Length: 319
Image 1 (cartoon, helix red, strand yellow):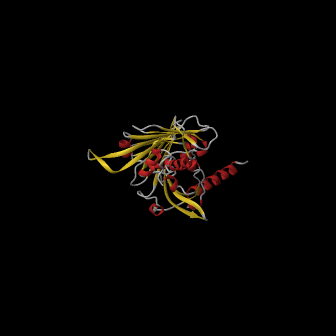
Image 2: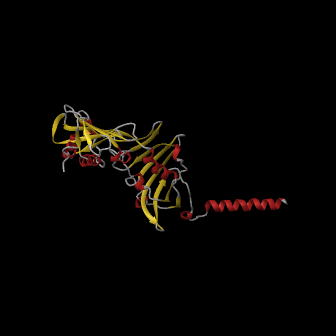
Image 3: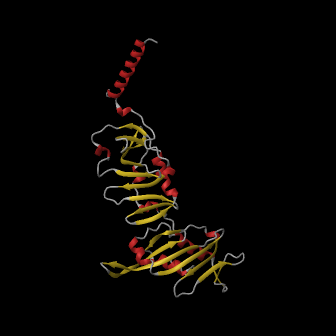
């Protein structure tokens, strides 16, 4: 090949490169994928900030994930964090969005949800999550990426996934059991006789304290239904926990078939609260419940009849 041909090829290549760099291409049509390139198992910490609300931290240590907010920390199961990790790992761009008014896309200073992700190798990624909408009948979200320096329209509704509080990572189940698997039940109360009942032989009746006194199956069923009503209770406040844990009023223990460890429900009564340094007696008692199946949480039980019925055993269950 002659030198003049090589020179011509060089100048053509240079011209094409300059055109690509400087011509005003329509960047809104450029397609990107896997913007953050995050692998779920490499995530060390996720920090979520929303305007007017406390920062939510999700951190992975040797024992699993911990969620914390407002000086309150709770261990959470990996399955509670997994959907969020999957979203981060799967962020895919549909197109770049050129705009000089990010606030119209809920990406203003007081609108966006800020998510900072720290990987185990020390790498950090920061994204801001804005408006959720639909495009071509598909869910999409506007986001801003610090490293890319632009606004993108990405697939899926991301905002609702990250608009969370620490309570969203706490298990709301007080107790989970199958009544037909019950072998024995006991109720312990300070200053009261222990109530213990279990099924004898093949009879459907339950014997009380091995004393020849029997309980009808229907009474036991009603009592177990009272226990099931504990599921769905609201979480107790940190303030209530501090005062309730000092006043235990009863324990219910269920021995279940195929379970090595009994289900244990502890009941506490909050009778006073702190008001400006003074203890003030509450007009209506509030009971707290803690379960061996959910040891990291206290639940608030304001239904006095329900609490009393459970602690009485299957004898005087309120209607």
